[in-house]
Each structure stands twice: as C-alpha cells, then as structure tokens.
Image (tube, rainbow, N blue to C red; front, side, top):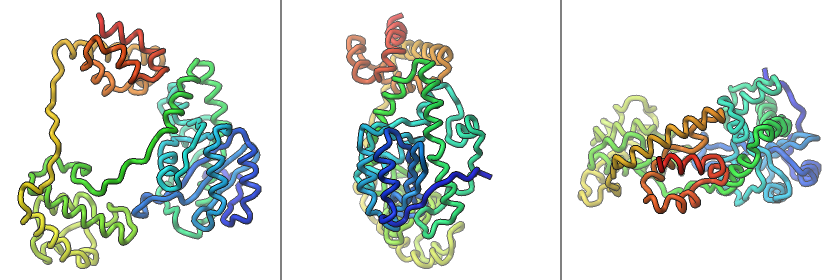
Length: 377
C-alpha cells in the first residue's frame, strides 16, 4: 500500500484562495497533471496536483476552473521554480489545452538521469530515497470521470508530495558531480517543447503500413478517415473505436460486403453492425479511386556513408562509449547516434560551425574537444 499524505481537494473556486495564495507566495512549487488521453478523442487537463513545502493540493478544473488563470500565472512566473517529473508531456498539454507556457522548470527525471541512475521513474526514485512504494493500479484511470474516488485522489497527491525533497537530494548530487548547469540547460530546452501538430490521420503514422501495396494503402487511408470521424463523434481515442490491426487486416483483405465486415474477428459484433455499411463504402471508394490519388510518400534516396565517413562514425562511437563509461552516464544521453551520423556527413570545413549550431552548451563543454579529435585522427 502507498502511504497516505495530507492534501486538500479543491473542486470549487470559492475555496481555491488558500491554495493559490500559498503557490503564488512560494519560490518553488511542485506540480503534475492528470489527463484523459486514454479515454477521450482530444486529451485535456483533468486534474492539477501542486505542492509547496507547507502543503499539498489537488485542484479540479473539470468541476470549476475559475481558479485556473491564477494558477497559470504561477506556472508562467519565471521567479517561481516549478519542480516536475517527466514534464515534457505536461508542458505540451498545457500549451495545447490551455495556452499556458511553463517557465523555470526543474525536472527530477532529467536530474536523475544526469546523476547516472538507470532507474529514474518516479516510483523507483521515491522508493530509493524515501522508502515510498507507489501503487500501479491507477495508472490507466479515467481522470475525466466524476466523482473521483478517495483512492484516486490519494494516488494523485503522491505525484507531487515528495517532489520538493527529491529535488533537493538530486540537486545536491548534481552539484557534487559538477552537472548542475547541464540539467539547467536541458530543463530550459524542455520548456520550449511544443505540442505535435495534428494534421489528421495518415497512413504513414501507422506501424506496419510500409509493408502494404499502394492499393492497400488507399484502403487503409479511407478506413483511417472513417475511424477518426467516429472517434471524434463518440469522443473516444481512435484505438478504442477500431484497432490498427483490424484496419490493417481490412486493408490487406478488403471486405466487400456487410457480411464480410460482420465476420471480422476481435471486434464487437454490435460495433461492426453499426459501421459495416460505412466500412464497405470506404473500401469501395478506395478500390475505385485512380492510382494517382493513392497515398504517396515523399521518397528520400538513401545516401550511404562513404568509407571515410564510416571511419569517423566508428571513432565517434568509440569515443562516446569511453566518455560515457568515465562519466557513468548512458551513452545516448551524452549524445545520440543520429546526431553523430549527421555530423559525419558534414563537410570538414563546416564541422565547427555545425557543432556550434547543433550541440548543447554542456555537450560542447564535455565532448567538444573529444569530437574534434575523433573527427581528425
């Protein structure tokens, strides 16, 4: 069982004053969000957890969100440090759903990675530092459902209750290791994270679609559009309307009749009966469409590395592995393979300019000379 922590649940803006005053007065707060991406078509902020050194609050924007503007002011205030764990998703969601940009972030997941830990999930860190064990049974909960059970609220409160002392412990380690500036830079970059552009369903986002023939891709495209329309109408995630595997199966063996749709395995018969005629119509439309309307992926010819570039890449990888061992960091955290491959494709006279534009300041500090030495053996 997870330990109980004291918290105040605010689902009426008339009672939000003490929480907002405490958060605005603090120079450092912890925050987390709960959303409903697994349960609705367009995800939204369903719950806000926030903590100061003096208290924990759960604020409910679905029952009453008149308080949210004041809370957004705290998130956007650069004088208040916001401590979060794995904040990338929350930062993107706040921008997308509420138009809020979070400033002055300290991400405890990033901090833990830069201490050299290989287990940097919140549950692992809370158990390591505080002996707290988090339950996993609520991880897929529907946070848009009301009322929220006491168990769910207690679970949510734990997401921020220990973040401030966790931040102190990790910051102390980073200071000893001389990596505080590295994490600060990573967190500043994190604040710039933008929501992914939603350009509608695309066959090229579907795993396994690259194996389909062109006409099969045309069928898949029409089926994706059909699924997306129903997902929007029924306010469900697309995968909860029809699985991608079902759509791929129909694309490869297109059902041409209502009876063929109803014979589909792994899908509820009531749903199939409801959409069968639309599925057949989508398939017929795709199969009758001229080839020049089929999905066409822009092809980028693969340019293999030259023998000289391959040699540079091998030297860079060996150097990265050596430095990662010395620093006790994951080599991918130090610098990823895609960056190294892009670098070796650059003309030698452009290496310094490219590194200046593409390496982070801490990477230049730690790896700059090592990279140059590996490029010029």
